[in-house]
Image (cartoon, rainbow, N blue to C red; front, side, top):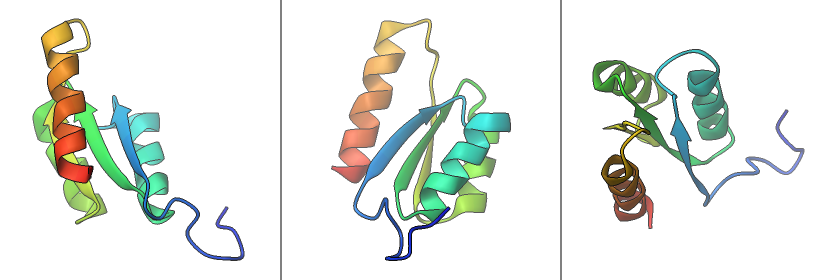
Length: 84
């Protein structure tokens, strides 16, 4: 699905929740393949780390509990700190 001109998400950052497995993980991998830096957020931090490790330097992992506002705020802050 790449465009003829190259990676269409280069210079972009994405925060993807539920990205340690399944559809979220596939989305994170695709975004990274298109040039984006991705924050992989999941309640299961170990699986988030594994997903980020597979993607490589373009990804970071973080714990996120979307039922807690402080966790959501920390997730957003960590993404902005990492990627600007």
